[in-house]
Length: 115
Image 1 (cartoon, rainbow, N blue to C red):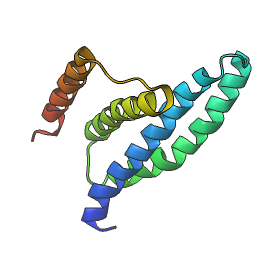
Image 2: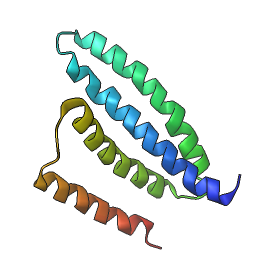
Image 3: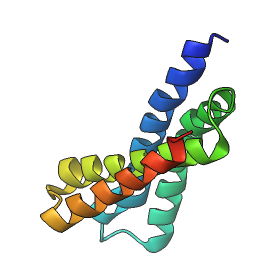
């Protein structure tokens, strides 16, 4: 595998993985009339799709990133995915305090990638 692909593929795959996972976590809130067992089952089915992206991302990514770097990429995309899902599925926009908090988490991630 080319070094460029090992750098870029995990980023795209982890982005997709976290969008799917955020949908798995929160989509069931759109159907409060359904049972908890239904919500768990549907969420697990959606989450299975997440593994289609996450597992290859980590297997490819380990050639270019440390485990801490891969986890940091996942965490950042988890937050970005949350904001996207919250906006498009629920019409929620992050407030100033949330944006500041997300920015601080992003700033902290700088140190994980600093040599």
